[in-house]
Image (cartoon, rainbow, N blue to C red; front, side, top):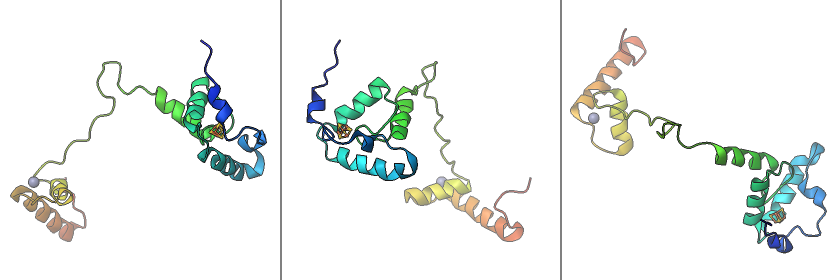
Length: 139
Ligand code: SF4
Ligand SMILES: [Zn+2]
């Protein structure tokens, strides 16, 4: 299939010095920012970024993204969201249990009234802190 590249006719960078888009040397950062400014006003920014990602474009600013950002986006897009078993890769953190200091803090975060076990745990931890300088229970 021949890719449709009509969008390039509407590119804001047509006719511009392409060196702006291929930063290097000690002014690279300023160059990238200048390129980004051109892209920010470009009507085909989305198509351009998609094209660069699709074709694995390694150099230069495309669609307002630096080559580093394009690389990171490609890695993210490729990263599997689930493991081979189909289960989500990352485990959700354990919810804070009631009757612990983190349970108490969870109540505060969620603006719910701390329950008795949580209040107790928090008081215990406070007392331990005063006695021992740490909230951790003695081993
Ligand atoms: S987004 Fe930037 S690099 Fe892409 S076509 Fe537009 S001006 Fe050119
Ligand atoms: Zn609780």
